[in-house]
Image (cartoon, rainbow over all chains, first blue to last red; front, side, top):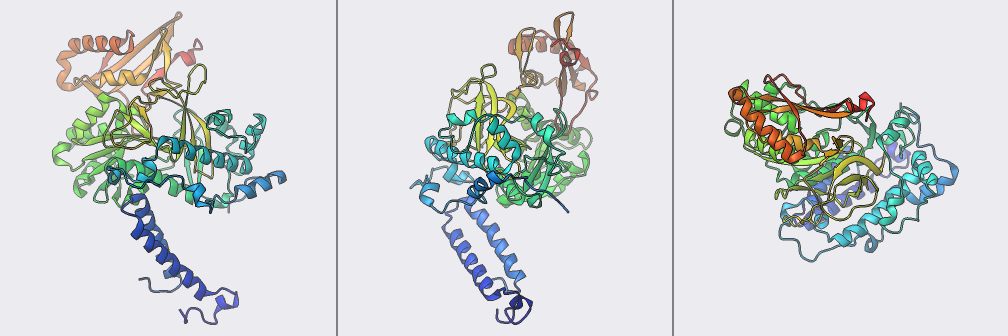
Length: 67
Length: 487
């Protein structure tokens, strides 16, 4: 993340990319945990998978390697 | 660039702050009123057993809480709703029981028509969000008059597909299904939400948009589609085209095993359902929804002769046709007044749908606690009419026509008045192979119609294929008395 959070236009605008990346990672962890806890209830499981797809878009847009 | 907003007046701003951005309360003990320790044995056949098996008493609590929330939302954000409620002397906070909700004035389609075209253009002041938040435009089919515009936010659209996920999962759709949608997607909401609901379940969705009927059938065969959605009329007509123009026998030559119908009451009319099932060799399910409401009901795999109301997302109230009294007892038909709890851009609060429905006597063996409406939508208040002093539902005529195998799928009913006497005529088509049986069919038809509708008809037979065919909503019932000025 260091390379993305350098001295570019984001830093000048006061956007903390490192913090954003951490929050996105937390979101991902929470969603993965939710998926584990969903107990096969489709309304939870399928919506969580969509949430994870959105998290992946956030990661792609931050220049991170989604995993 | 879209311009305009909800046009709020200063005193409402406080309420708007209170209504907030529709975020859930952080106090989960108040929000989450139901948590079963054990799942229902049929839970795996439900999209969301948490809500679908919730005890009725707790559903009522949930409904009251959600009704108050959407009422406050509409009051604080839309001038149209606020003026309507102020005229009735109602303010947020005054609705303490579900019975109180019947004091909330109903909204009719004509009221929606009269405000659209005004600012914020084109929706008028029913809009509850800034125009910039509207992402979807749809409109009603215009069957009953000038089409009504329906704006939705992205979140509303998620809600639409969520409601469809309940429907499709209950009807046995799974991620292994390949769903073909033989419908010309356009400004109507029809099957857009079905498309995204199926996608949400993990199904593979094949859009059959601009193809003609033959091309659609061939594409379904080519990709081995396992499920389709359409109006009952069009689904029947597709099977006819497959057989007569392409020489295919759908049950043997195609892979369709499940069909979801919408747009017309046909899939809840027993004889029509049976015709579709036999034509396709597939299980046929009904679903009822509407552009201005949402996808509010569904038939489940048990097929108990009725449809579940999604009571976690909608409040369905049935009113007596003459007195307007709320009907809670089963078996008594009345007019549906419906509220969608979670649709935000253009809320649907106590909408007079003019659908005639009745509660079912029996609970469904599937285990869902959501109540059933018996026989689906029985008709439209506009269509159910007195002929020669007898109350007539056009679906009863359809059930008779389609129970006679010698008759084609199409028919037309015309009611007129001559010298103060009602006349009812029925046009039907004989199947080409049954032309020699016209007299026999006529007698049977007259007898069955008298038995089911208590009326005598003037019946005429027309060449097969000559009556109008419909792809969207069929209009087979014509009451000329309304234009003759004598009714």
